[in-house]
Amino acid sequence: MSTHHLNSQEDKPAASMPDPKRLIIATNNNGKLREFAKLFEPFGFEVISMRQAGFTDEIIEDGDTFEENAHIKARAVFEATGLPTIADDSGLEIDFLNGAPGIYSARYAGENATDKERCDKVLEEMYGVDRSLRDARFVCSIYFIYAEDDEYSVSGTVNGYIGEEPLGENGFGYDPIFMLNDDESMATIGEDEKNKISHRARAFEKLSDILKEKFN
Image (cartoon, rainbow, N blue to C red; front, side, top):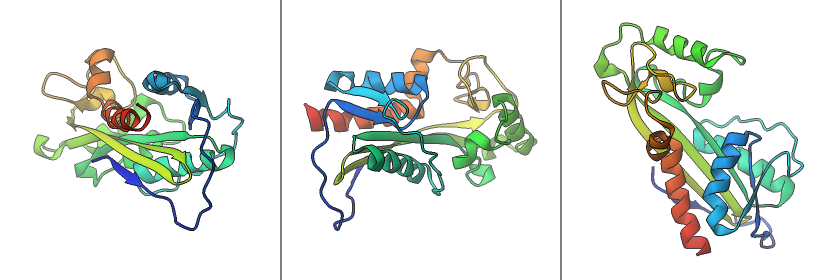
């Protein structure tokens, strides 16, 4: 998907320009915080979590797409804090399953299911399906609200197909059943390589281009 700029509604009051040195990532996941902190480091931002910003409300992600859910999270935190906010939403889409698990990727096998249980559920649903019908993709949408009238949305994808059994010990989530080619799954490649080709890496690249244009 291409990068695009989204304007907020005209009738909303203009907000004062945000503190350019603080930015909230709409997550409390330390790994994700580190990823975003590294991305924003060259631009002089202090990256903090929702919890560090004092935001503890539950966010109901009831959008129909990854982009909508990322927007819902970013908007909720931005409106509560007034600080620039970034949120992301990602998951697996399988053509044969009409795009499932999609936005329900994290809870596809139940709220407290393990990665293995999620993978096993997909493999069961894809049992006996011909290779030509197993195409899939990982999708990541990132939503960046810098100010009330200054919002950006980017997405990244990586294409592959669903294997017939798990392969590899690296990664997490659906990585072991997501095949990049006949010999490699997302769980067989190293972290450095994954960070170059993953859906999040590709969305990051688009966001980085926006940041360079905006802040350099």
